[in-house]
Amino acid sequence: MTDSAQLPSAGGAAVGRRIGIGLMNGLWRPRVLGSWRVPPAGPVIFAVNHSHNVDGPMLMGTAPRPVHFLIKKEAFAGPLDPFLRGIGQVKVDRTSTDRTAVTHALGILERGGVLGIFPEGTRGEGDFASLRAGLAYFAVRSGAPIVPVAVLGSAERRSRVIPALPPLRGRVDVVFGDAFEAGDGSGRRTRKALDEATVRIQERLTAHLTDARRLTGR
Image (cartoon, rainbow, N blue to C red; front, side, top):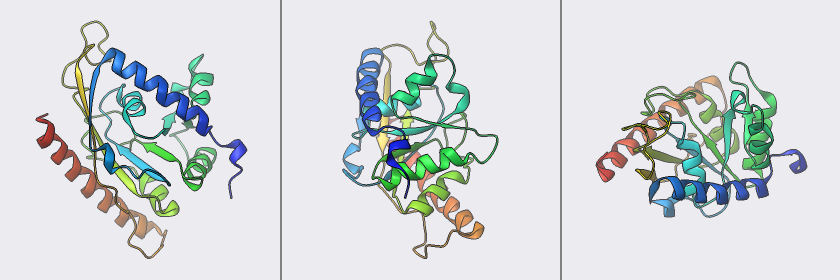
């Protein structure tokens, strides 16, 4: 069992959700589809495509439950460090196996929380073409269902004022998919089992992204 007192704060994540709601609706026009597919209680992993800097905050402000994201340690710089910690986010060192981050992530799921992961690892095309094994590990190890999430419209056009962001008041679609189990039911956590789970996950995420694009016309 993980010491809950040392885990990223669940209350902090709830505060982060309220901040996200205000920020996202104040700066952009998010349209949320399929949020009813998110299990209302119990552990859940959000697998989110990542094509823009705003994808994480956008999901925090549109998801029906507070989210603890795995965020690269480079983002925890200066005043952002206490802020991100305060809203329950998880710092992760991507250059090695960050055992503290792994323990915190599994602890969040153990207490029935929501873990947000960008399975592509870094910001790219946002098409789930390359998945890291971390998502499969957390899903198989915890038994938590995965909910695929497509954030669309954040990368088609860039803001003329701040190139790293979508145009202010532009529409961004957030589409939640059906929850699914990554494991094969055997409970195995071998390298072969995780590789097989990664293939299953990629197939489901890619299919969801295709459906989301068709649904939104993106």
